[in-house]
Picture (cartoon, rainbow, N blue to C red):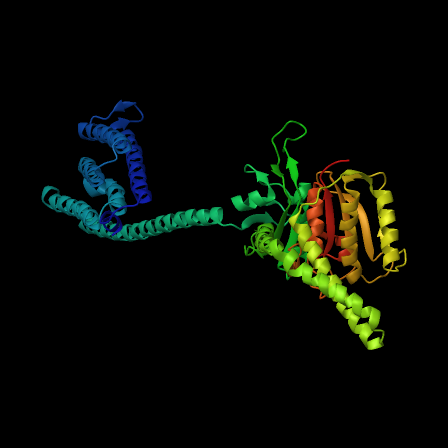
Length: 561
C-alpha cells in the first residue's frame, strides 16, 4: 500500500516532492499517448485528412486536450493530490473505453492501453483506489464481451477478456508493492538525511566551540579544513584552505611533525612552536591569495595525530589535534608569581637577617676551630648559607624589574669571549663548546644581561652534555620572518615534554642543587631587552632520525641592532 501508507501520516518534504514529480511525469506520458492515439485513430496518414469515424477523432481530440489541462494544473496547483489523480484516472478509463468500443472491442488490441492508468494508480493512489480502477476496467471488458454474444454472430474472445482482467489485478498488486517499498525506502532515506543534517549541525557547533584546535589534512600535508580554534592558534585568517602546510614557512614545524608521525605512527604527540609571522597571501602575479595570516606572539602547541579510516578509498585523511600549552604555562606561572609576591614582602626581614647572623657566627667559629671534622662541618654550613642567600637574592631580584642598558652587541666577538670565560670556569677543553659562524651579526641587547642569560644556559648544558668535542653548540639562525635567533644546544638526553611544560616556572627544578629561578630570570631578562627565550623542538631529519625532535634553547631577537 504505497500511497495509502504514506498519505496516512504526515509526509516529509521529500515525499511531497516525489509524489508531485511522479504525477507530472504521469501527465506528460498521457500527453504523448494522446498524441499517438490521435495520429493513429483520428487521422488518415495516406490522405492527411481526419478519418470519417467521428467517435475516434472527437475522443482523441478531447483526450489530448484533457491531457494538456491536467499537465498545466499539476504543474501550477499543487493541492488536492488525490482529487487530481482520481480525475485523471477516471478520464483515462473513460477515453480508452470509448476508443475500445469504437475500434471493435477485444480484437482491436486497445485493451493493453488500460495498463497505463492502472499502473499510475498503483504507484500513486491508495491500494483501494487502484484495485477499484482495475475492477472497473476488468468488468468493462467482460461486459463488452458478453454484449458481443447477444449482438454478434461471431463468438467473442471471452477468455481473453478474463485474462486481461486477471492481468490488470496482478499488475496493480505487483506495482503497488514495489512502489510501497520504494516510497518506504525514500521516506527512510529522508529521515536518515534529516538526522544526519542535525548531527552535522551539532558536530559543527561542538567543533567550532571546542578549545582545542582541529585540522584535517591529507597524506601529503595539504590542509582541507580546520576549526576556529586551530586557525586562531596558527594565526590563519579567512577561510584559506587547500594549501600545503610546508608551503608556509611559519607552519613548517607542524608539517615536519606530521611527516614524522606518518613515518612512525606509534608516536602520538609532538611539541612545536609557531613563531610570529605575517603573510598577506597575495600571489606574485596578482592572482588569488593562497594563504593569509599573522601571529604577533609565539605559541607552543602540543600535537596529537589520528588517522581517518577511509577503507580502500583514495585520498586518505588524518586529523591533527592541537592544544595550546602556552596558556597552561602562563596560568601556572601567574599562580606562582602571585604567591611569590606575598613571599618577597617579608623575606628580607624574616630570612635575610637570621641568615646573616648564621654566616657571621660561622666565620667566627672558623677562626677558632681548625680540626678536619670541624672544618668540614663549617664548610657545609657556609655552603648552605651561600645557597640560601643566593636564593634570597634571586627572589628579591624578581620583585624589581631590571632596567636594561641596551647597546649594539657584535655576536662573533661576544660569543668568543663568553666561550673562553666559560671554559676557564669549568676547566673545559676549548673544543667542547662549538660556535657557529655569526659573521657580522649584531643585536641590540644589554651586554651584562646577555652574558647572564647565556651563562645560565651554558651551565644547564654542561650539566647534561657528554663533554665530547662540539657537545655544546651555540649558533645563530633566522626564523621564518627573517628575524635573528641564537640557539644553544647540547647532545644530552633533552628535556621531556612533561618537564618542558614547567620549564620556565619559578621554583621548578629537576636538580637538587638548583633553585628553579635561573631559567625564569633568564627569560625575564630577555623580555626586558625586547627578546624572547624559549625551549623549542626543531625537527632535524638528517641528524636526529625521521621522528626525533632536537630540543634547544632559542633566543629570538625582536629589536634590530
